[in-house]
Length: 307
Image 1 (cartoon, rainbow, N blue to C red):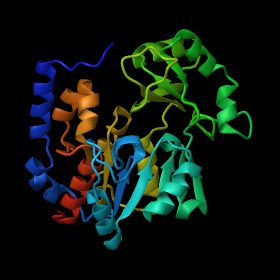
Image 2 (cartoon, rainbow, N blue to C red):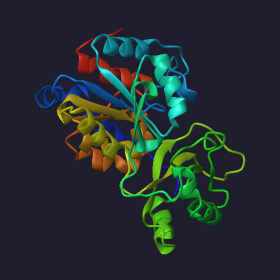
Image 3 (cartoon, one colour):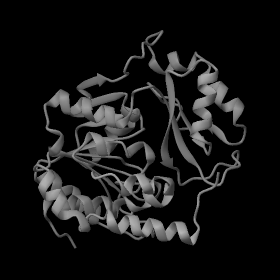
Image 4 (tube, rainbow, N blue to C red):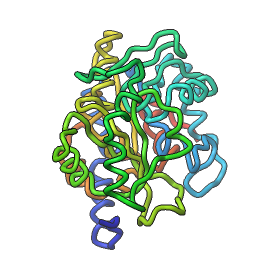
């Protein structure tokens, strides 16, 4: 299945983005949100620009707009909580550089506070067979099954897959429903494969129309479930939180936070989500892409206009 970039599809995406746009729904946001205390944010493709650069927009032009928005949020004591598929050691350095202190690692399996002084494990009903959650999953042979069934369509996301505590990380382009059926047929229905969005890199060992990141996680563990866990852990009302992301794995955050904002590139890369977005009251689409879209959300929430 290749991405649909037909004129009809792109016109429909433009219409959904207009109807669910941030500016078009300011009244709803004012009426349904409390003063924001936490912004749960994805990193790659959302807060940062191409190749993970915080100071580049989608045209590769230098920009300070996301940095100014981040400074404004930190000045208001808004907690920018990073929510990512990355390992917690990677997130620690990113958070430290950005002035953030709390983050959710490996797609919801670990909640980390104060740059690592407190770590709350979040594995649902999964009970590891050994001390290492990652090794406990790998020893079951699930990853080998997936890789064997999708030659040149799925591979480990090296080198980022080399350092993991909880979730095996792969890249490629496959049909998620087919993959879940494969897992069920082989007795692995306690695990799910989560699509965490487009990777802006090409692999010479893959034969795919685009490259996406896939995480193998225990069933029931997800970004939105982790957000609910954090709200409970810190006693924060849902309506005082929002989330920003760019992938299908982020969309359920619209049910966990007071509002969810999909940056426009996320809609472009996931056109199959358009109908769900159009009909979900708590999900909105930014006009800007990547860091520009992220800044648009922060500026709106803080009531600021940043040039």
